[in-house]
Length: 601
Image (cartoon, rainbow, N blue to C red):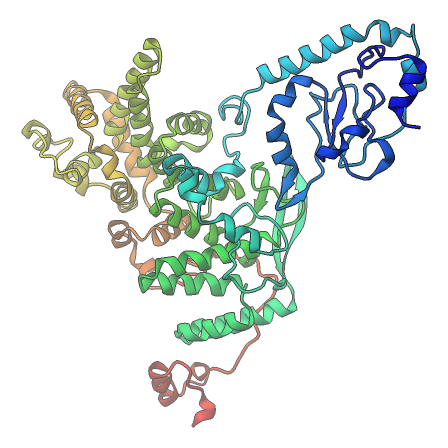
């Protein structure tokens, strides 16, 4: 006997059932012909007959207005997915509808007349509706501000995807319009954050690369990549191919080991030198995908507490792949995404900073117009890292303050404070690094005032008297960031600050002499990580300023200037080389034919 006939026998009419806490909870049928078997309200939302199809659990009848959206959410690629409403909507019914397995257990006591739940049913419903309203009204989309909660090196997953930035510039339809059909067809073992695998890539199989947790102490976790025996053999073949100076040998190796990271990095450089930027970027993305698939389950890209020792050769590939991907992103016009990659590289070993990302992070922050982040980094790290002693930070931070003061949405007192701080820090920067001014004006095609160019403090002697290491840092900064100073408003502000500094110099300010003595002591010789950064930057002015002991040694793109205290986990086996025999004729043929061996005699 149907429920409708049973109600008629009892003399009940629809809509006169006792109103309980679950009175507004019912299930929407999946088909139009299921109306005859609609469930009775207040009985736990179970579909009659147990047909196996599940509907949408709704607590508020007014949500039926947007039921088309709910129906669309349930259908993905032509199939009905298992989903439930948020906990804030279904509070009081937790555990009844999770992943398509609603509980059918019902408490008969809850529907008896005169029970406390029935008497307070309306109050419970009002409380539920108030909770829904509060949760919807108090929620704010997006992550909380970076300066309020997160670590200064905290990396956000969404900013590692360049599509996030491109969609902000050009719209989602322009960016993702051609990608959606391809993404449905790709089949890869896992979803990654650093790159999106492409259907044109070779089928992925584990190349023998893995990651191990070395130790955890003081809230930090130390990891290391590892090569199994098969990957070590591929690494040995790669080194032989590099020594042959023939890129085709690397191509042959990638046919058998398509996800060998160092081969992908080296071939990417070869493609870039041949102006094939698209292929070069594709190879770097494939290398990142290979390494991310090898991550340890506890390794986090975003926490800022995971460390990779650059002294281990297996870890260097990850550093270099991230750096090259960051460079491609900056050239592609995605400075915000490049900034996130820069933070990620710096977070892997912030104390040693093997790629010297502190020489670059200020530039990316200014290009991304993330002035607050640059100022916050300077304020938090100045005490223990002396960032003001780097020319790039000394000039970029006051520029960030000035650009911040130009924003119209700031209160007047904040604008005044930012402008005052910008002028103060710029005076300190010009006093500490007077040799930056004239080259900067020359880059910007600005002719300086005669009182400035002829003054002993800013004249040509200021640039000539700089120590070689300081000249290298200045050349690196100007070659990379000079175009940020070309705006007329910035030049007018710089002119005012320069005249104020000249007045202080002529007045005999003791800070001028103190800065001169500091320059002579601090910049005797640049450390190895700065040289490594200059080589990777490929800025001509900075590369030309490298010392001779760096330029005379061979530099490999897959491992530029390796640390002198390298930690080797395995050693390359010795092989017979004509050089070791000292055979002059063999050495001559070797210089002509890199693949030549003594067995050919």
